[in-house]
Image (tube, one colour):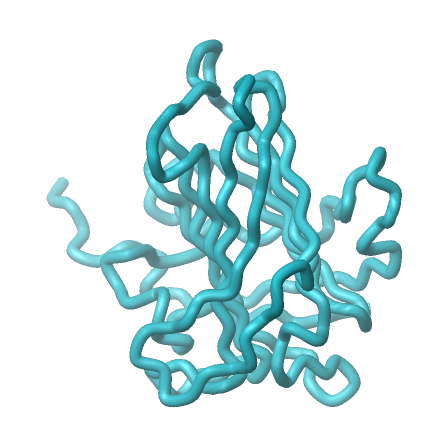
Length: 221
């Protein structure tokens, strides 16, 4: 059988439910920042092309903002240590608070956040930094986030790693669940040993700059 010219996810307009979780973010450093339920798990578009996803991404909301968690498993012994210059792992998150479907360039309601994960000096803990990045070819930019506004925690596991990020409403220009319950959302999960994972289509398309390629998520109670 010949290889398909386009990924199967390209032919589907996926929509997902995003449940409300009031108990986030959690202030106790000894507990998970988010602890999102199974109902918040996003679809895994790579399965449409017969690929097994290696990361599980969950998304939830409340009046204070959005919570995103990534659970990446499947690494064997000895694969957790990485000394590459670019770090241990990276997660890109795109959010459109207006769920724009009819434009191909980002507006002032479109946001890009980048989480960079690095091993500490002893290689036993993960450190994470989340920053807001500009979106290429955008017709307008949202207000930029100040340092320390985004909460994030990352942890190593026996066979992988996890990341939790809380995006406060104040860093999401136009976030207003009382008047709009539909958002555009996309992600890219990367680590040092596996192929990048996306919600639907990947870098064969301008996923990072074209909000019409992002997935619709509906905020539900």
